[in-house]
Length: 160
Ligand code: DQA
Image 1 (cartoon, helix red, strand yellow):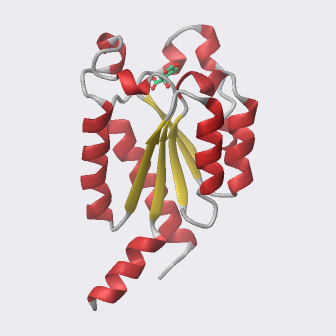
Image 2: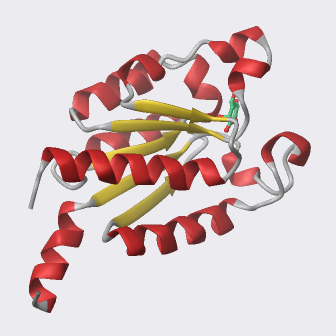
């Protein structure tokens, strides 16, 4: 296969990775719940995993609902899928869910902690019903598993 063909394959597999509020504090924030890896380390590991899958990532974190929504809207026509940890907005944001639905892209939801083993309010997700699937409680490895699932879904729906 030529280099050119490889390149076009990776462009078809562009994934937007979205991290919601407070995830910029990973490593320092409640490490007994969220682990000791920083967000930069998680993103770097994901980049390596993405390369091995022929995918190209754009990673984005914000503490602001509107910024997250703007970034999700901007992915239309530029990404083939979205991997998202919506953080606390998981349990509160109709607007974030609407933005995700509006893209018509496949969505995989990730949580570091097992939200179903925690407070009752964390057991409600506005995103889960519109996601392809949810990975919760597997720590930072969950992002890689989510990425694998998303890439497999995109590949199966757009065969080369
Ligand atoms: C989280 C779980 C949410 O309930 C919480 O608000 C977060 C992180 C997780 O990754 O486990 O910020 O999404």
